[in-house]
Image 1 (tube, rainbow over the protein chains, first blue to last red):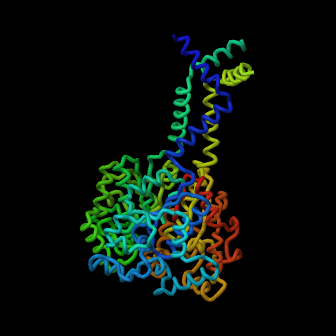
Image 2 (cartoon, each protein chain N blue to C red):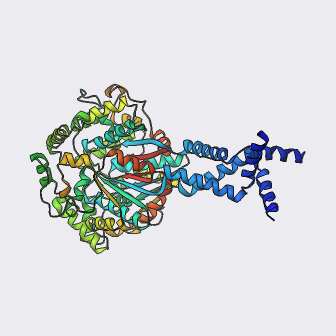
Image 3 (tube, each protein chain N blue to C red):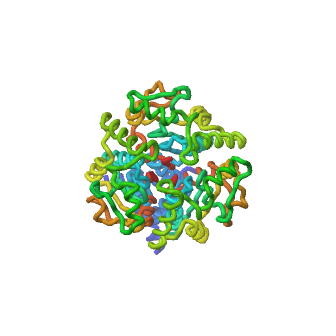
Length: 195
Length: 195
Length: 195
């Protein structure tokens, strides 16, 4: 019996040449890689809603997606307001959340600057400079991101906190997600950034 | 002699069937992985001390730890003030560091907002909204993090700079660490974020 | 014929002992690792130009480089102003970009604070505290980074937007790069942070 088993094993490996062995090993490496870290996966946490943050977020997302990467952006806290429809002037479900949307005007189209906002002069100038240099504004980059199949996930907890409803947000978003979903994806992402 | 060695090698491999070979390879992959990148390791740099930053930091840390991840948070710069005991009104070892703690009230319990702070109205409203939605405040999430064995590391350099002493900080922290320690851990972490 | 081929394959593997097989597998793992994730590679996006952000950026970059890591810093948005020569008072190519440089004084040597700036009192105090504690100012850390072969990349798009010219920036920088270059490097980096 033992002699027979030994012969089978010997035959199995004996049938595997060096090239086949190498292919077998590489395959196992890639298999494990797919489970643990995909070199092609990018996840961004869009925390900031100001023009100077939503710009890098959307530039990185569209550039990566255009080069074939699998991109997801998780919009949380101030970042979630970037996803509000341009025409929505007031959002919120009570006086507090309504008041916030009045002070901090929602939508990427109306984003301020974290520095040198100067009552909107700063953002206006930035947009002019961008136009002169052929850089698309963030609301256009968001539309481009959708066309490039970038996953845009609104943070469920922020929606609840800030009283934002699905109808307040632009079309084409993924379904609202939580921190656990974002973490699970970041675990497998080659690049994860908090912006 | 040569003939004998060849026979031994042939026997070693001959004794290894395809399944055994696969297990052997997988084991070596995991071994290297443990040395280089642990899919289960999360490291956060808690740079910001405002409510809108310390909240994502503590939400991510506790969510990850609750799902079994190995989490460490390195508190540096403004983030370190989140770890000051609630009852400490003034910290610092000279007029400059004391003055700073008076202007920028320490402790997560008294954190402001980076936007819409409105002399404390903003943070108060945020806390109300959180309570209504069942989101724990950051000081509670910090306590939860400790229970979940999240490593909380104060940055030694910031302690020196800001004149913060071990006794100013809450209990249950890891020992003060430096940039080198944070980097070494981030090298092996599946996710590293600067918040 | 078949019998002959089988004999060759058997001989190839038969000549490989367990140690040799292990070395062969480890080699393939490292080969793939070098293509996908280098445990020794750090990439920082220096987005912020304030003292409280450019300090962590330069401290992490120099600490990592000193311990032998391969470090690149991509300076974008406000971060790019840190690379402006100290003596340059005004930068920009039109009234808007010139105006910005007047309001937001460029160069790491003149960086403000994102909090408690107090018309420059805050940064002055921070620098004093740093000096007392033996922490080098960011402009010195930038010089140190260059000596340690840290790659310092100005963002081309920001240069265009902000009207910054190569001659406005300090010596020893890498050539201006874009988001695609930064992404490509981050894909292979063990640590990527947006600061």
